[in-house]
Amino acid sequence: MNDPLSEHHHRPGIFARLRSSFLTGIVVILPVALTIWLLWTLAGWIDGFVLPLVPATFQPEKYIGINLRGVGIIFFLLFTIIIGWIAKGLIGRSLIRYAETLVERMPFVRSIYSGAKQLAETVFAQSERSFERACLIQYPRKGIWAIGFVSIAARGEVAQKAETGSELLSVFVPTTPNPTSGFLLFFPKEDVIELDMTIEDAAKLVISAGLVYPNAKDPSKPLEKAAKQLSSAAK
Image 1 (tube, rainbow, N blue to C red):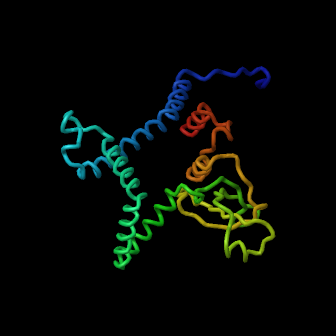
Image 2 (image 1 turned 90 degrees about the horizontal axis):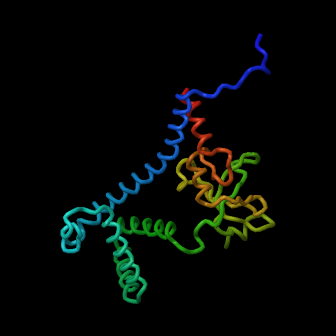
Image 3 (image 1 turned 135 degrees about the vertical axis):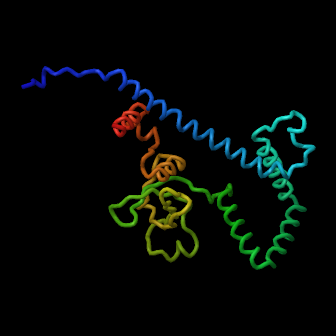
């Protein structure tokens, strides 16, 4: 019979240590490689769309003999800035109003343009429309918690006719793994628990289905521990 007190803890062998180091390296390299690959692919896609529209005289490939990845992004940014600058002026606003008047006369095109305009204004608006903070709410029933994003306090008829004695907050509850879809709900302020995590960290938590927590809020999973979990799963 073996005495538990006399047992010694054996150090893992060299192959176990090598495997653990390899998995730790994978945890470090994979996000970096994936990010670089996505940026490289996105730059190539934008180049393929923008550069054919640019006159050959202005393309650097004509002068240096090689195709620089990302030049299309520079042209796109410059073109967008110029269009935005013109649109802010009196002449630009007049032209936009005239063009929208023409579009309103086209039944099918009108629907597409209106939807695309609302989407662009919602995503890129720099006003109070952006989410303010992440929160916890009980949804779809008491005792079940969900991540939400507080936008603004409810206004108008919604705030006036809601039977609540306190301020009503507009909360967007995203779905997993696609946080761009979800539900718009209105909660009394006392039922909304604000979180310290940023909007980006809360979005990561939703997209990963609870697998990725903000490092500052969940320090129990450093890289080495993540590698050990991968090693255990591989056994």
